[in-house]
Length: 101
Image 1: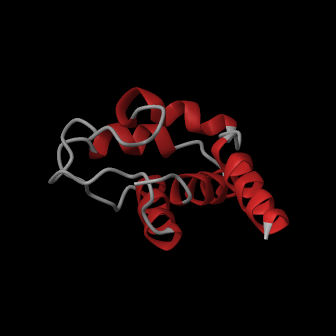
Image 2: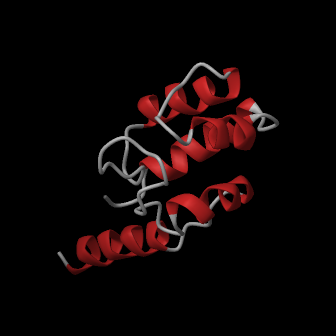
């Protein structure tokens, strides 16, 4: 029982200290370091922390293609995603989807 508890705690600790992909630095100004800040111009009060990976991939790829629309901030997102690689989009979606809501 003690081993199971220790392994569980170590799993949570490794997640808590997981390093953000370098490209996440682009996100921090509007979304905050924990991705819980509501970005300027966003529709509603939804934050990106803990969104499903599929939803994040759809949105991020849409911003890169200039087809996604989150309201007033879409031009900012189009610019932010313009030169982001598909691999970095995958890493962002994976990282952000695992952040606590």
